[in-house]
Image: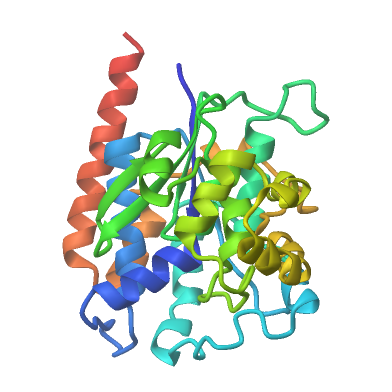
Length: 311
């Protein structure tokens, strides 16, 4: 039987759901639309991707190594709305009830935790970390930074919403090139040149995406671009020379750390139960009447498929 690990970027999906779904409240009047969206995405993933294993990664409040490198990193972002921040505890309650493990690490973003989980899930079985040899890993996120994690050879793909919360697309290497102009292996090099205004770092001033893509098509990596400076036109060479320090810093900030020191239990990721009584009780508390019926239907279908696989 094939095994497939789905890793959900909790912050990215909750944030997208909060803005895509109209305000919803529990019977007590507490905001719940982001949790509703997270649950809906999870059900969609079960139906379309059919995972055997699940994990969810969340950001933490502590400063990350990127903020220590660049104090203004993400500083322009407005504070998270209180109507969203108060829902993360409920999301964790739901995931605990469903038996889906949550991973996070102080000093690191969810991106780094996700990168580490994907790295270890596809690592050589001789690794010291127990590995159930997944046939594939699918990362569910709306964050383009994670396109760098895609690897067709290791069957690591991204499942990304393209409109709203539930209209999503599965991205491989070809899809990444179509969207970004470069393959996953060059995403960090691209961001080192162009920066990322959403994260508040700026790459090489005066270098836009079109120029950066052209440079990378010729020299493949930013390191090689700087080795080939003497081959470039004067104005472009001057911009790159002046922006070298910023490019190096941007490369560091854009790179997802795939070696976060966390304890990973792959076996535990396979013990989820989306339609257990704990979830049903919680959904009654949340006022999720429609979702209750949906998870019961999904639960029955999963059991039928399990029974069918025995014969």
